[in-house]
Length: 323
Image (cartoon, rainbow, N blue to C red; front, top):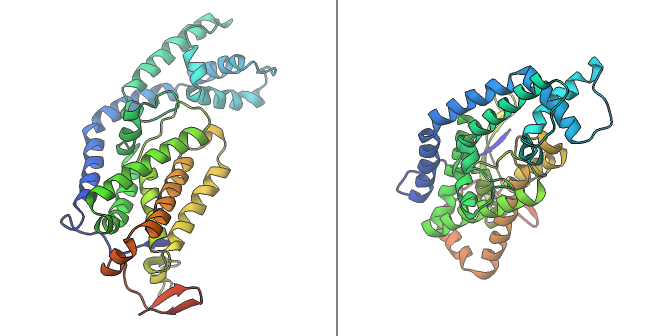
């Protein structure tokens, strides 16, 4: 495991905009927490209803005009899976009121009431009215989705990396410049998500795309400078500690992980928006290249102490003593 340390988490006075973004994300999460939990319980109630899901699977299969018949026990699991995936197909959900009744009218009426109740509950969930989808992509969604998170773990993971990379870049770019990079990377990440992801009702939420842009920008600007990483292999002496590596490795590790995740994801099965991450990386990388070519960013980088000073640096000749 490699974890970038950089200069650690800076205090509020050194990176006020970064901290304000963190507070905004945390504040929004807890402001909607009770509402989110209440709606999630309602959604879970329907998703745990095997009769509802199985009935929906049969209807969804008919909606897709699949030639196979669902009669044997060996395909019952597939029907259940189709019943779950149907909730991500906007064309199916839009046709709820016009789908012809099945032979089992009792089961059909129960399904229709349940799915209408589920859709009503879902519209109240913060992730759905703040999140971005192909069918809900107004300009406000491009900004709001960056401040919505699906879980406490999702929030904490993003905020840690925002504090680590944001503090460095804010001191280099200034508060306004940093804010524009954060929001701009999020917009590009959203565009990548909409263009690279199959149509789905599952919304894009979270600051991951924006933070991917920050990571790529940092790695591009400081590509050959030593960055302090914490490494852990085993809980034994000399198998964990700190190591200094070129900053470009940060981008390589994150981008390769996201690219592998995107290529291995199967349709609607993925729960991580790898395409948004890749879009954020692309935005940060291009901005970094542009800044290095057309601004005085190198002078500001040399004046600051934004990267931990290690014993080794990387240049075209390989690892050399750092001076």
